Image 1 (tube, rainbow, N blue to C red):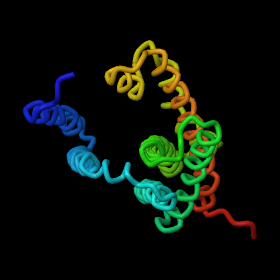
Image 2: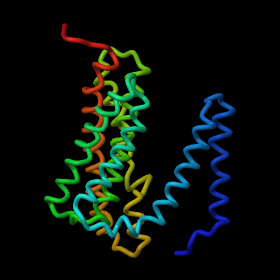
Image 3: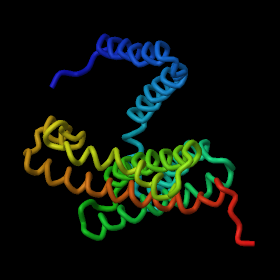
Length: 228
């Protein structure tokens, strides 16, 4: 497989202008967010690329857990901006994501799908944290914007739809990222499929747990409900 050169990176940056133009033309007011998010993602991935050898060399259990907690904290901070009370929302979302990410990782370890090593725990925790973050963000945004009779059920449903829809078309419309990476790296397709099945089903569980816990913990904050 040929390496991606600097020219290719420049060309892909030009593609960013497409959603920017659409946002401007449709008055979505997302131009700054698109550019800023793309720039942040670009820089952060390069930093990760240079630091990944160090991260994967971590051997102490507390260093591995500490880095996972850092990822969850950063994701929670990003999600908490969508709440009514940022500080309280952060604490509630952090707990929710810790549960939704921690339980699946423990199950993977118990089932010996992965060993307790940084090179396995950190990427898996990253995938789970990303899924939990998206589900939590959708729940909070839905609760903030929508007026619905059964808002809790509605918000959880909206948060889970993207993951469910991706499962419906998986293998027909899209070949998932992990499977694609393993095949490109030379792994047997069936072996790649087995790993991908574990991942996508676990991501569905992560999204469900994150959406449910975030919704129920933040419901009172959004609607100022009290028991008195």
